[in-house]
Length: 325
Length: 168
Image 1 (cartoon, each protein chain N blue to C red):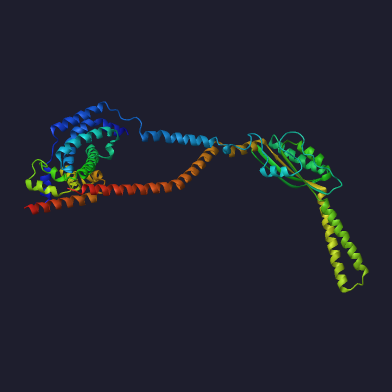
Image 2: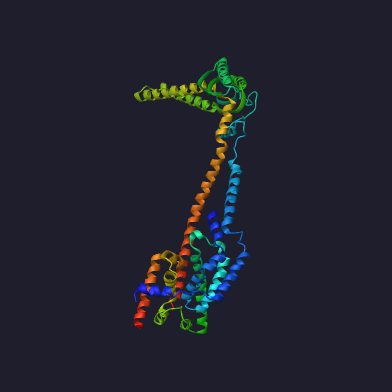
């Protein structure tokens, strides 16, 4: 008998269920009307739980303190570097209108290097230009001069940066007048005393001049003459350095930054607009995804191996179970 | 989801049970080699199928295939309990199963030859030959590849042929 004939004979001997089995199954099927499918399934639960978890995570990210803007809207915050330096220097004030709260130390008998920074908010672009001209006039009125001027404007925004040299003896008056050019948003004063260095230089010069006098009293050999020339050059160099230090210390360096308020507000909008929060949320989602991948991959691999092992064992047991007649 | 609901609403569980009862019963009878056991298992199969009917997805296979999968799970549980029972009682229950006629209309030599097949071989013959399922569908019920399913069928039919030749 061929396989085809064999299959045909087997197919012809198809079984039909006995009447009692059919009746029993009909009774079972009749209960279908009373059975209601379960409303709760894992799939439905996931459909609800996943968006809820995502919404909670987004809410946590958006309300996280680190995602809030660090500056109060409408006010400018001092730059971190300036703030740090301010804490390490003599006096500091940030914000506020009116005259500069910094009180430049006036010590005419001492040699000091003074650097002051003043940031002012000016109402309009024209006001920036006017204030810049007035600042230059203020510096010149005290015998000072500008060393750097940079001004620019775009639409209604404008800003200007000036570096002025002002005689140190008139620094207080100059700062008071400069601060009246607009609303102070930040200021900084840095004073470095150079008197000790000057005194040390004086002592070194005096010591070298005494040595020179001693050498000149000796017999003028070639070696003595060479030594006298070396010491003379050293004394001249020290005297030049001393004179340059005193000359530079005569002037204080004043950096003035003038800006319109629009620039400040626009700056805030660029950093903390609506898309800023979207970017923050995406960043946290990315970080979460990396964590899931790094921590989840080994777990998934182990689960996969366990699943394969269980399936193999189950199939072997099944084959053994069905290998008997 | 809408298509799935519409299809399931078109075929109720009662209709599916009525349409495929003979297939399920025949499959179980061939698989177990015991028509009395097949009657009990058929009832148990439809009871379990009713509980799981909400999981049935017509897009993943026909109702007949799904019912055969449920029947296979029930039959495997039956085999396991039978093995435990025979171990306890130290009885060989297998020869007793073929004392009655295996199916109506089979030649006596073929009826005798069927006793040499294992349960696994009878199962694949039942699915591929008696129920006339194609290889992928039968393979999905057995949990193996279609190629493996065809190989099992060829081995079973060859074994059956050899038994018939010996008898002749």
